[in-house]
Structures are given as structure tokens and as C-alpha cells.
Length: 332
Image (tube, helix red, strand yellow):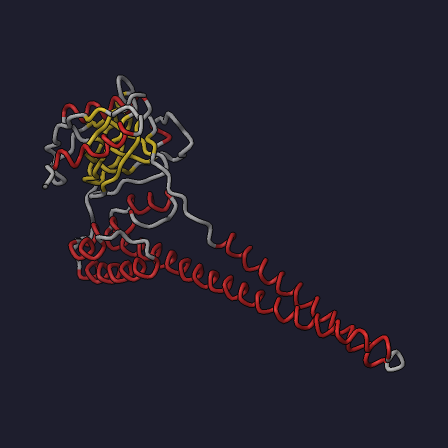
């Protein structure tokens, strides 16, 4: 029996109720009529982001818990107004002022919204257009700032098209070799024929520092942006290849240690068998010398294999730390 779209959307809420959690309230969202090519309002509500950058066309969930940001989100949800999403210079700040924000961000909209019992909002947002933040125009009742659009430069040149094709192919290869690409990769990259949009899409999917992503979104020249993103991608590809090499070395060290342990046991057994002969033939110094060298050789092999193994594990910890994915909390 087929289920309607509404019933499919409420199924996660039913699971929460079954688990004993309070059901969140689904907030009706007024659609934003703003398009990327439309002139921007002079002032928009500001949504500071902690530890992430929202790119145009990017869709991502956010957790909003700070009072000023909740007011901005509620206004956008009820009136259908766009919001200016801008990254904080420090992710540790809970309440950011204008000086704590970068100058370039993204005008976006709220697509879906849930309100939980503790008052926090969980929203799904989409980036629309790059923009530059001027002065803060108001702090109450919510955070607002002056906004100006950023026009893309050199977006339709032959060089930009060549760079787009190189970046597309490199990103495909990186995703296939690392397994980090989204499942819909092939269809998405094929549909992104505009060079600037492809650069933004690739940058938004790379596990790089927030400061580096901010440099990408701040670059209005599409050709330079494509080169910048390709350099970041190539660096991540080299890291992935090094990681695979290190993992292979660790496995080889383990295999070698196992094989060495068997050989050590065999040599130790042979040395024990030879020990009685040494006691009988003390007059023959060579026999005693051979037995002692066998024992010493076995001990040296064990120590060398252990040191090799610890060295490889240390390199893994230093060069390939795990990436930790955490929920993105919005500042205020």
C-alpha cells in the first residue's frame, strides 16, 4: 500500500514518540519569493554560523539555540524573508558582534523548520547568492546588517570552462578512490555546467578548515576560485593516498610481526635443543658461541619488529587523524 508524502515525512516523529521523546512542532514555512538574480534588500537578518560556511545552492541542516538567531529564523519562517548566513571568525563565541563575523557570506532561505520542547529550532536552509556584509544596522529585536550583492567575474570564459572540466574529473576521481563523495555525485557534477557553481559544490564537500572555505566563498573571480578549489582538492587527494599507504604499511608490519613471532619461536626451540650440547662440548667454544648468537638474534628480531610496528602506528596517528562530524550549532 502506497503512503502519502505527508505520512512519510511524519514517520520520524512517530519514532521519536515511540522512544519517549517529546514530539517537535512542525512550523509552517512561508516560501521565499526571492531569486538569485533579484536585487537584494538593503538590510537582512544575520545568522552567524559556527565552524561552517554556507555556499550558494548548498542545502544543510542547522541547530538554532541562541535567542537573537531564533528571532531571525522565526521572522524568516513567518514572513518568507531571506536571511544572510555569515561565518564567525571564532567558533567558540556564543554571541557574536559585527567585528566577530567575516565580511562575505550567503543570502539564503529556510526550507523546513521544527521547534523542540526546549525552544531550539532545527531548520533546513539553502544558500542562494553571495553577498558582502557592511555595518550592523540593528541589534534588537534581532541581528541585522547592510547587505550588497557580489557579482561573479570571468564566469563564462574558455579558461573557466577548461578549469571546470579539470575540477569535475579530479573530484570524481577523489570521490571514487576515497569513498567520501555523496551517492548522487555523478548526476550532480554533470548538471553543474556553470564553473562557479561547480567550484562551490566541490568546496562544500571537502573536509578542509573553515578558514580555507571562507577564502573560497570570498573569491569573486571564478577562474581564481576554480584554481583555489582544485588546489585544495589535490591536497586532500594526496592526503588520502598517503593514508592508504600508511594503512598498507601498518598491515605489512602486522604480518611481518606475526611471521617474525613464528620464526622466533622456531629459533628459540632450536636454541634450547642445542643448549645440552653446549654443556657437553664446553671445550668447543664455537658451539657455545653459535647457541648464544641464536638466542640474541631472536631477541633482536622481536625488538626491531616491535619498534617498526610502533613507528608506523605513530605515523598514522600524526598524519591521518579521523574527521569528526558534529552537528552545526548557530551562533547569535
